[in-house]
Image 1 (tube, one colour):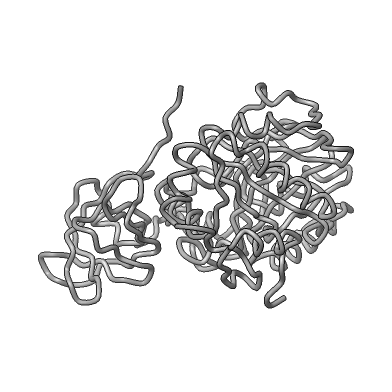
Image 2 (image 1 turned 180 degrees about the vertical axis):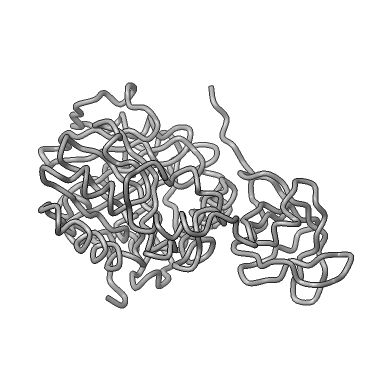
Length: 370
């Protein structure tokens, strides 16, 4: 699937995007400036093409039971019209992927997976759902997914001319989903995102994607809507303390290590990975923390975290950047549990220079709520 282009690729090229390979997809990394795009989302609104994400529809009478077994959370308890963040675990309770799952009906769900794990998730769901007789359909290639994020995102989306929704936009709560039509095409609209701001993710058939993008750009002009690439998306999610698969999460990472035990429902009769968690109740040696660093030099993924007393490594940075919003470097790191308490002083080894850093609670940034 190397160098796959989204249905919106030509529009990005026309807008002057720089591209990068991401999980086999050619994705916009930026249009103008990483900082400008980041600040647009924090202060006004940003538009992202997320059509590389995987959309997998689960339907059938026993769909709730199938997902209860396949995933770590209690999916049968999710109300219709709600979404849930959850994990797909392997038998050793390692994370195959982190997912957002939308309940569209009594017997219908939409699972949204990371692009890099599309086939692994489809395979896991197909295998695990087979005994329940439900349908698992990969709709990724037929779907355009875009996100409008930022404090003015409700104004942008409500300006779409022919958007008809079952639940009015102003009534749609955080982590909720509604269906409808946009210019005669079916649309799925969710109040979700990966930036730490209010925002929406919109799903339409791939044939309707260009028209949706063009209209969002047109109506968004009055709200200073900016086109945004993966670089801004990464600094936004880092400030919001949101994990990225391949950085904070992988198939060897257990939920407790990355503070995701809250999404695992151990009260369920069974799910893939439960037995391993039952057999290994002791906490892992390492845990994910937030770090605030001094100066302007930021630690990147793979850099070592050092005990300033012994000068020995005690962990590894998983994500790091100079925070555009906060003005100082921040990082997430997997470190020895002995160093996890807030205000613990550590060093970051940034190419041989020891940068002082302090453990602080995640997230680094919380949005203003009116």
